[in-house]
Length: 345
Image 1 (cartoon, helix red, strand yellow):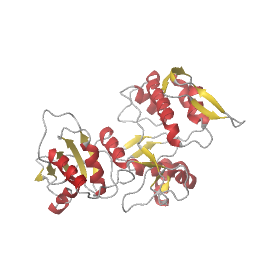
Image 2 (cartoon, rainbow, N blue to C red):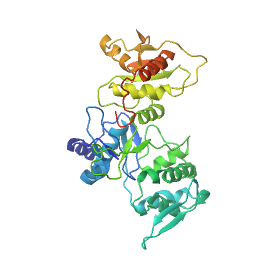
Image 3 (cartoon, rainbow, N blue to C red):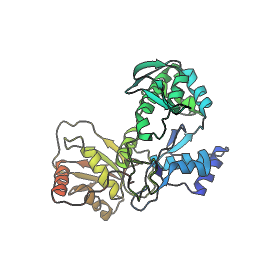
Image 4 (cartoon, rainbow, N blue to C red):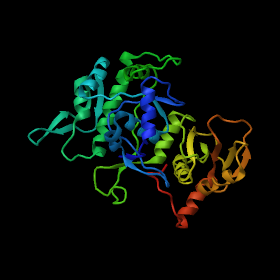
């Protein structure tokens, strides 16, 4: 996969923080280094295969690059090999997983062999590690993803066996501590939506490269960490509320807002009692009118008024009405340009 390349200064800053100084972290989040993840820079951004970040600067570079992808700062990272991963998972006890297909790997003789059968089953930590490391010759990462997600779902659910509520005044200092904290509360596993990067511009060497859908990634982060993400592009921070009656409206609006340089930092997709006809904007009074009007390029005609109360971390609240759906339909029927849904942001 590919994403922003961390600068030498960013890597050095992270290393300084890891050596004992206080890291400037507004939005701490746990991180387990397991394999590369990434995305593509925005219209004026740049891209780099995130596996290269690790090759260039090790765990610090990989973590920094992944922070850039998700818009958060990790408070804990851990680099583990196979034995280290086993040590991390061993305390969890039996792990229940449901696999849609058998997990296979290519053996030393060049033949495929089964690591785990398909279906629901209870496995050991050793089996989980073997399945996570399993790979068939020339197998794309996108084909490995369903099994990887299923196994990590089982791991996160099994974390309840070591559950220990985190002290908000003193967050866990290790990944094992975060697993315990996960086990003490609601937990789930989500994977970023990706597609193979097949065009010669993005992937000139025709390697196994996956491209992240930035709109779905930003929506995911807006749901699990509302207003906590720190955009780096200086664009407006937008909270979206869907009052169209159409579940797809949030995604479509996010695609267009990203293309316009804005950032969706919070969403409210709670089903409303009714639908709204007009789209409305409520904005921080300190913003200039031209910045607010620029959003209508993305979401169509809307009424705008200063917000009565400021929301921390939010510049503009957008209440999507049915006018937005009409705006989408008009753009499609007129053959207008549709912004890309993957790779932006």
